[in-house]
Length: 138
Image (cartoon, rainbow, N blue to C red; front, side, top):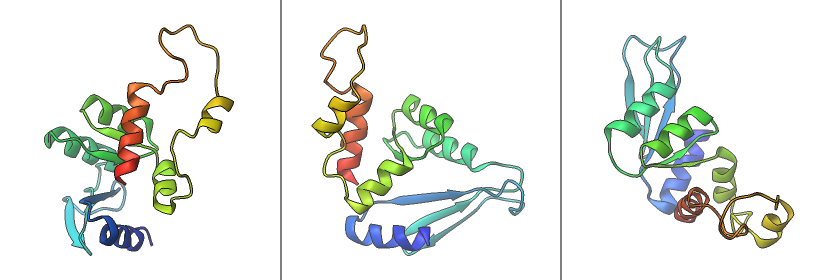
């Protein structure tokens, strides 16, 4: 179902999409790759987690990736490698286009918490702006 949804998404947006599945416990002896409907599907080899495959891909190909993950470790690695990490929930919202803006004014005002940082407290951080730009691409 995930692959079918991504195939439909790819038909609309024509993005390069890679999906990595975990073969940690039940995978094959070596990493396998296939292309289904224009979606690159990678299965990690037995004994290797999908997380390490994703990190290796992000690190080896020095371009800005949009990494859809809810895993904090992968997200941190993506940011450190010059890529943008987008949460799975935000990606689903972008797919469904339920939200017209990632940082709606009403939503941002409700979540305002007093901090002792310098600068405009209502202005999104650089990281938040990068996520917003990535979501607009999706």
